[in-house]
Length: 199
Image (cartoon, rainbow, N blue to C red; front, side, top):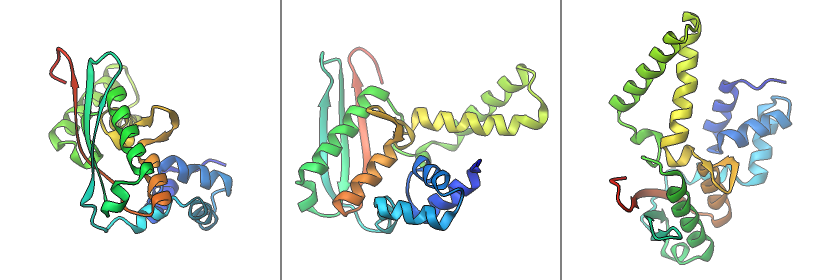
């Protein structure tokens, strides 16, 4: 059975779980959204949505220097309490995120941070490329939408495939940590340095 993007989006909005988790749950249940919701709750991924409005003002600044000393990352990861900020699982998560940033070089934490003019410029490039390749006019909007998704996966940390398990996104990693730790977790900001460059 083919699961439509709108089904995945609707389940994601209800649960806060990652896109791939929602898709897998829908595939597992033959497209039954209620049963898929149960599967996600059992996995604990829906817990992230419940914590969305909570204040996350504690946390840590994690530093990571890649072997060889050419790439360094400083990332701020927030949680709700100082107790969790000292928790070993939380610290490991912050380190994993710092290593992800070192490896994948995102520009933004999440989609909402991508400036509108940057997004519009990229869309125009994708549109012109599709036209130049002679793609059918009726398909161009769909092609552009697909390319925008790939763009987000490249430049937005939370949309990137997790380097240790590319079937997961970094947002899925965060959702799993929220379910395990029981607090809202937010990647606030990061800086990545590479020796000899401006990135």
